[in-house]
Image (cartoon, rainbow, N blue to C red; front, top):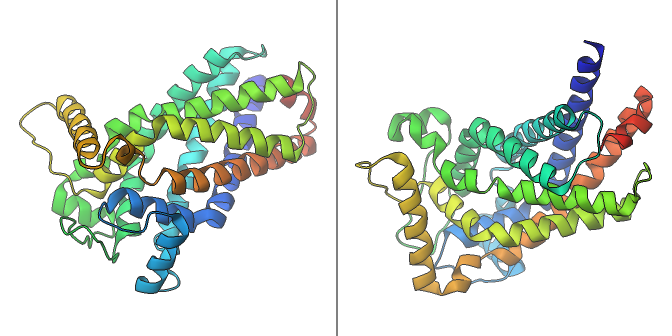
Length: 309
């Protein structure tokens, strides 16, 4: 009983540290995420670089426009990272039972934690995608301006199922954090070389950045499709099963985008995404490690904490 309490408490420390780290990092780099989302969703926008699109947004929509939808994003991110870190570390602790992890184990646990996270938090992300794009000035004439700004309005106008728009690509995208955590944990083990020590800030920042850069580039075309589906501007047929419809929708959106803009069109906004996501992830991992290690040190668990990971 005592060991399960410690294990739960340790998972809670990881979850809170991950949530606080991610919220702080995202707040700092939030305008970059606004630029990335606009590039993904608004296909006719001329500005291609992140500084150009941000200056356009500020000029047309006001100084605070790059921070539009900040609060719901931060709430969603806080919940999302809390769930992910808690699941990842509690599953890892119960699976390994004190033994050292391997990349394949990290990947499987990362995917399992990601699936739980997606099913629990997708409605929050659907709402905040609408909020971030509410009142935006689009270049693409096909985009209907959205006035949805709450769960109730989405449920009333589109049904409860609309809160889980983009769930299928999100489930495929659990590979993103899974690959990220696998690379991060693997590089951490390499740097330690079997010695339980705390990594320096620079080491944590660099391996966090590398892990995120690889994971983001590999899964980016699916992230674009996920943004389009969450925005709710793509009409799906409801005659077939949801799974078949989702698969067909993803294939259709990928093929159409590739035909219209070439294969590189699947990676539109990647520069903005990489800039934002790599810096955010690196800072998030740095803050997460520092908060967790301080908390464990106060609890007198620092050595155990490093041996278990």
